[in-house]
Length: 120
Image 1: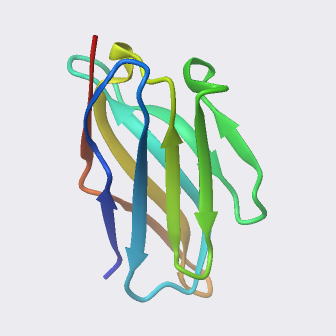
Image 2: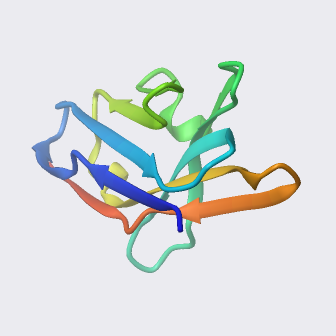
């Protein structure tokens, strides 16, 4: 059983910053990608940022230059540093990982979600 525990969400004023964390636990052979998605009320879930094992990153256009994704492979943890937050960043943020439970056994897991609210 793999669990992802997210933390760091909350209420912040526009222009402020928050740092989200996602720690993976359980039997994990390897982690490949670690990502953050978000879902705003009435909208579909969208990819915010993703990072590979080697450190390559990709971001949604709407967050480029403001958000930074990073990971600590030893701690099986990913981070999303969010700066210059805007009201339109308000959403439930979900972390996601892919990898292997054991060699050849695919793993994908989701966190429970953490609410980020940006007030104007």
